[in-house]
Image 1 (cartoon, rainbow, N blue to C red):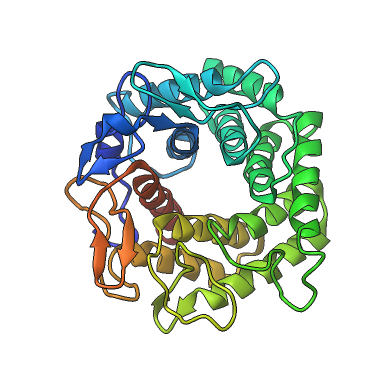
Image 2 (cartoon, one colour):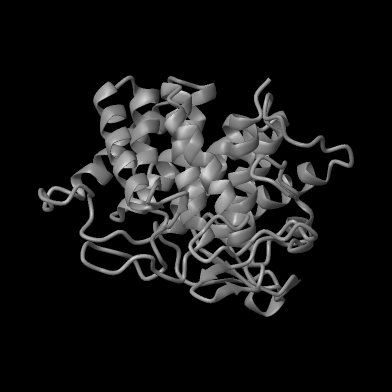
Length: 347
């Protein structure tokens, strides 16, 4: 396996049953007792629709297995939506939903998945169902900037195919305002929050998406500056050294552990968009570094990608790795390899 290898979907298939995508695994075996969550299923819908989008360069799907999973994931996300558009995150293997509906990250990721299916899906019925779901939840707003950022990414996908859709344009504009306004109290710190936490690159990513989709070059400039700073912070000589699960702020030691695959994949997402907007090879090289991180070019020289299963270990630790291959980490690997192959292996 190399940094430009096409992603493999076998472990994703293995983690999926008739209801959804199991959140956790013991090594490579699914752990049904922990059930499913919208956070993961929506991310799964994103990578499957990216894989099957026109011009993706991904593996063919001769058996239709990816298409079947995309429908299963879409049904799961749609069933998580309440009549008012709020989303319930967790479900058990009996099909029962647990917890109150809300507009937290799961709402934002649901909109990301729905928007991506609407914008990139190749099945007209699937895209129509996804658009219905997007419209149902896209009129709400969250007080949490990251949730708004995830939702904004979904809105940008909708605008790829329907640039005039008001729900998407309004949501994306509000998402950009939410992440910028969040930093109003930190003038001496070039990040809109007092601490780097998780999936950090989603913040500049939504600014890039908003700037390009809404015709606002200042937002693009802001997103590029913010992403460049984050990339500098998360790069060591020759490899990525990303923010650990406990977060990071100036004065704390680096490298930090555990490092999570989701941090790397969101950085790859944002850098892929930056490259598409600018053509600057800095961003395509960053995507290569992200893919290489999974293959051992990291702070401990540990390979996290499993060439046999197609899955990914759940975290990089100071003395090795978390051997379990859950949904979040596997989707992070798949997503990053999608970008690396598309941007680096070019005709």
